[in-house]
Length: 150
Image (cartoon, rainbow, N blue to C red; front, side, top):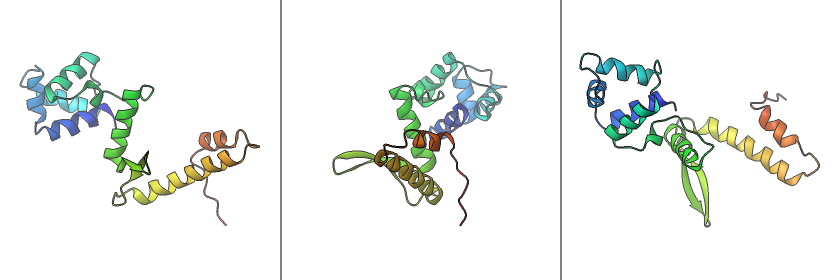
């Protein structure tokens, strides 16, 4: 999910119009909605000071708006939140272990499940077969793979 999609999703959740959000940020009334529309569509990208102002007006963390940097633990959490919102992947606990699960009623469940199952099988094979040191890495770097037709 990109910054514009995040702004729009949060703005709508807060019950604000583009014009109301723009005015709350201090944009001139005649162009307030246009400016927000530009950010939401990705035509313009907000700088850090505007991200912080948006976060304050929308009452969220700046991390909830900015592009995620999954190289940090906080960025990873917001990436996981995006996966929950986009694909229905959510946190759960099974036998005391934390895990990610998929919502079976989500429209993308079947296709994402198939891809994740393929990933799991490649990973499991790598864990069991120490003789093929680069097999899993090559599998990941070549994804998606052509369908093997029989």
